[in-house]
Length: 355
Image: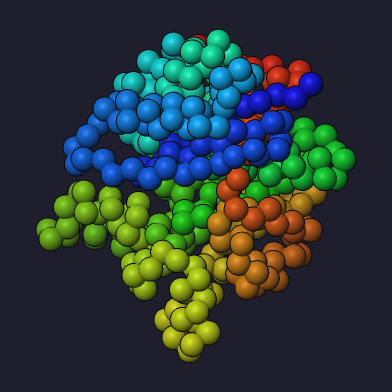
């Protein structure tokens, strides 16, 4: 039996939509948005809803029906990994936005609206708030400050599942380090199917294209008390204008590589610093698994660069065999999570039971 699934992935200035028959993508479109300044996330909902409606009107025949709708998960409470039914408790939490405002918070709302009309289930899969960390991993070194589990859980778990399938292994028997190499870099140590420790790119980790990663404490303290730097400006440096961008004024790895090849000394040094730092954090995650790994998996946008991956692999090949699953593949990852439930391979969780 074939399952037809709509995947909805809202971003800050776009809504990505795709229709799949099982794991075969029939159509995928990206709709760009230009929202008025000060518009709240919930005010964006009718605009995005119309985009979804028009997409379905174009690509789904009158007699055709979906089997499920799956949306990107938002900034929810800390929860176990898996596929979740969209329930009222989830929508209420996302409406309050207690863990922050992000466009992905709208994924569950949009999935719910379409699924209700089609009378099919609505799901989210592995939101960034997946939290399966060992208790010892939560200790930060400063009482009152705890390490948080926030990472690219959707893509990290999706490529881990794909690796298990490729190796004809059960996912819950593997020991993996997965590095999502995007503009921000997140990682996870996976043991027996759980993300037992993560690198949260909001707080720590290697130098990214626009995030600084872990910083020297005293240097950061000095910036916090800089009278010419507001809290909002500092936050922007930590989440968008830091990392390589703060040195080279680009967030594009291709430009960094090109400048390095053209004997731009600073670009070459920054490139090596990214590779050096990323390898160091991968090794740290490997230590969580006591150095006994089945593989290191590299994914995310930067994994598309052979030059970057080759140099990184050269630094980490002593840890474990390295496999590359380039790109984020978020729509496919969402659909794969929904399919595991529709095929009876796993059960959908209820958010209300987790909080």
